Length: 289
Image (tube, rainbow, N blue to C red; front, side, top):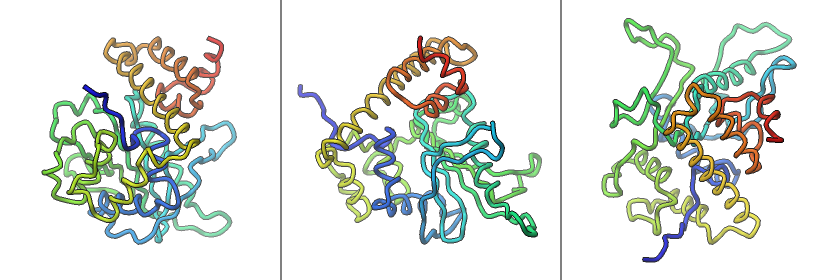
């Protein structure tokens, strides 16, 4: 039996995700995806512009934030899109922390300001399932707003978190009835496809497949993708093994092992911090291990 060779890039690699959604020529791909994902919250987004993904802290010595994607629309509303490959103990805390940056930067300095804020959306595309969600195998999307616990009435509707637990999305090609379904199918299965399904031959999806075709990468792009793919596979394998052995949750040994392996793979400190939850100082101390 011949070995399957991927025809299209893996969207869950850093390189693959940025190539599909984080480059100016492909901005229409991100716009279409966000419109399908957020139309019940936001309505139609007409235009988006990329913003710097690194956000500096308000005070010296505080932590900065590095987003996978950060953009704004024509109304000045902000969108953070994060791709998370592996479980992280305080992932929800990190996402909440990230959301404070686009909130704080709306403050008007040097003049009267009435504290009116624009919408902030944080989208997390997860390649894992939270332990607390495993009893809901058919629910893969979670929309979160500040709400009253008793009445469940939304208290504040300008801060929205959308979580997509992609392992739970199991629709087949024949079951893709909506454009939204098609986007989720592509995110989960792109690198497993050897052809363009007939259900995905719309103009925007044809562009995505063309952009994602590995054979069309130049030598340098292919090198970058392979490095990103190898890092994704190694880290996912290390983290999955650590979780299976009960090392990561509540035990520092598993986090240290993953951090050391990540350093050897050449990952930057921000990425390693995301994966392990260790601080920058703790990771720096592991460099000579």
